[in-house]
Image (cartoon, rainbow, N blue to C red; front, side):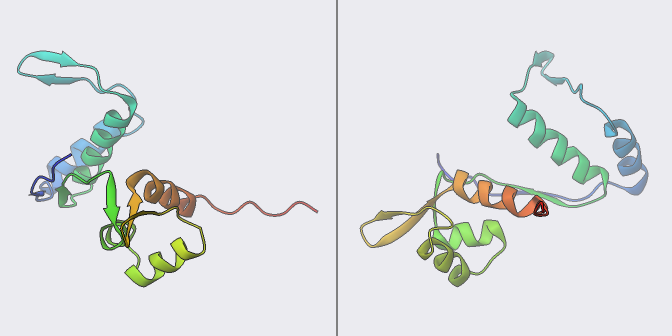
Length: 128
């Protein structure tokens, strides 16, 4: 997959953002029309579109860019919002799987996304 330059979109005006936020509230049925043709999105694409629209609906500026499947440690750390050193230490401990290309570490995008998902879930209290 080739990288494409990011596209930045400013947040919507307050009235438009409020109307969009109301439209998305509790909505599971979103139909996409491109040049008059209806497109059914995969669940992942639907989630991405809903997330994008929700962010715009909150008045946030949004950046959309592509990401390679295999990331350098710097790219993975930036995506995860952590330091490069912290990420390397996690790969050393085996918390995030790593592959080597020569002496260079590469991390799968899916591994970083899985780690981020685990960070979002609250820890379950231990049962006595």
